[in-house]
Amino acid sequence: DAGITQSPRHKVTETGTPVTLRCHQTENHRYMYWYRQDPGHGLRLIHYSYGVKDTDKGEVSDGYSVSRSKTEDFLLTLESATSSQTSVYFCAIRVGLETYNEQFFGPGTRLTVL
Amino acid sequence: AQKITQTQPGMFVQEKEAVTLDCTYDTSDQSYGLFWYKQPSSGEMIFLIYQGSYDEQNATEGRYSLNFQKARKSANLVISASQLGDSAMYFCAMRGLYNFNKFYFGSGTKLNVKP
Image 1 (cartoon, one colour):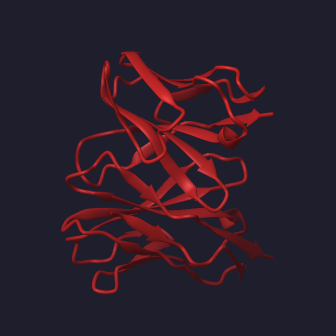
Image 2 (tube, chains in turn blue, purple):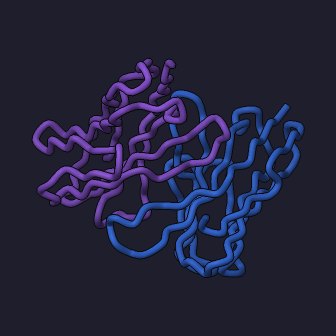
């Protein structure tokens, strides 16, 4: 258990509404990540953070923004949710800076956009 | 560009038998790491095993081993003595040494262990 929580765990929303997902960690790790998981695609990186206020885009960043004002929290925002953003969202942290350091994942948030 | 390919969407194996899950990759990096994760029906992602591109020996972790063939760019996961609890989705992933924030996943293989 790497001390990662995600909230909410489940959310149903309507097209066009803003949505914010929260990832919280308790161990002050520098690197945090947001992924989405869709059938047939595995996990794809949306955005990541390498420190407070330091973020960068992943491979599927369109329609998403992130913020990290504190080490422990990494927020993912859908400014105007679309049905194509229905997915399971995973937050992850990286423990250590070596190539072999795996990522530890949060429990996931299931988002449905109607 | 990095790419991970898992060509087996689903597999069945008899309990107590061994099973191999295939993973091939494509990368221009000289140094990289390969990972396998398990995702049971409950949804969490569980790290299983790691192989570095310069590791001369295949990685092993308990009943899991990684059959690494660098020239073929393959990193197959071998599960020995399958158990019912091994039924899950399995994902192969890769990360480059110099682009270590970019983790690339395959599409996964769903393994069903039959009693």
